[in-house]
Image (cartoon, rainbow, N blue to C red; front, top):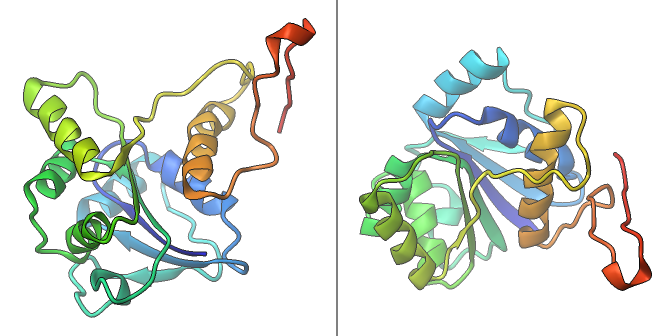
Length: 192
């Protein structure tokens, strides 16, 4: 699978870190684009973002990367975390950086584009931009954790969102908590 992972300056760098750790870069071609603000936020929140071996990094303003062209075949793009400013720029069709151009290409080529906003609350402009992107074919997956698995650490809470992202990409995690059939009278509880 060929993937583009991008991050913007919204809080939530831990979602990016955990996602990168759970994608096998030796089995998949993974390209990473970080906005300047994403780097600043990651430094503040994580001290340092650890990029796993095998992930190909690109500058946000490098428009010579393959995934900014519709002729290059990529399977999915994830923007995690996705600021509402970036979400709005994508909704308006702005494409003046590699990150924005790639998102535009994924929409026009009807490829999987997953946006993971962490912002709350939303204003009406945010909501309208989300609707525009949903209508254009994007998947908007807010970073809202679940608690069915009874997480006991911040990483386990974060993973409940990461598992949903992986499901959307088509790389489900074997560690993901899955709700069991309630007719059996029990619920499956898997711990990572």
